[in-house]
Length: 407
Image 1: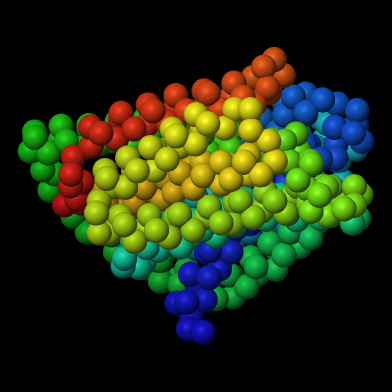
Image 2 (image 1 turned 90 degrees about the horizontal axis):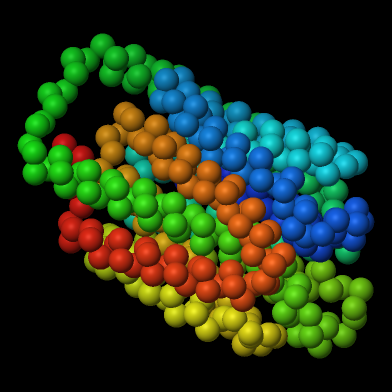
């Protein structure tokens, strides 16, 4: 394997681990802690919320540091930081302790998206395809969280679901440092050259400025709403399956003692299969453009969310796969749009702003899930998500056929 391919592989592993760590607690709360600590599912979500706020808010300083210091250096900090925090979180003895551990883990996990995506979108051609492949690894991290956590709950306890990924992340961080040590020095030289160069002239074309403002507004509106959909589906799906697929899981296994593993396996199967949508989207973005592809993804979600209420077992599994295809498929679209419009030198900071919006909404969505589930159940949540997908569809319809490119 060439150093270039190894670099891309490690970045993809980083995306896998980032989403794995942020969603381990979703399965732990749904399948273990509500029994072990005698707390309701809605009560446990409160302790995950600060970690998701950190996941969003700390993306901005992470992007700023990456542009000013070193993107590869920040990736090493990410790998080692989340690994150590996962080990510490595994030692929690109370809800407050696990909430604190998840908060600090969220601070380090915030590094990946603004920094890793800036590297992917700047370093290689075929941006749509590269972002899509990278996104699939992230989705496999979402899927792996349910599968790995469910397995460890049945075979050793929920704490091991933090310990082993933590050790792996630290090892990958050391490998990344070994691989990219020379690249970090080259980045330092390139930054010094850019700082010494005269500033590029600023164009003042009013029509282009208006177009950029319109597209930027649509990007951030759709980012916020799609983040609510993404969080609601990925975080709540293990609990949705725990409530609605128990009959199917027990028929498949014939052993009640393996229920957590089977629910995790079914969630993994849905997440992993739906992640293929990102590959299709990546190919389609470079060929058909963002507007058409985005409208198809939003339309899929509207239909499947609308029919999900009341379904159980086999039909619930099929429809869940349908709305996850749309939810995962839309993820690389806004990243692709930013990659097309943002300058390379400031790209990590632009991605950071995008992910501050995205992950702040992710954090705010957890109280929404808890509130709606505690009072009306998941059927009402699916109706809300169908309306949210309709909002995305209407906003995307206002996009131009071609995005304004970097000058």
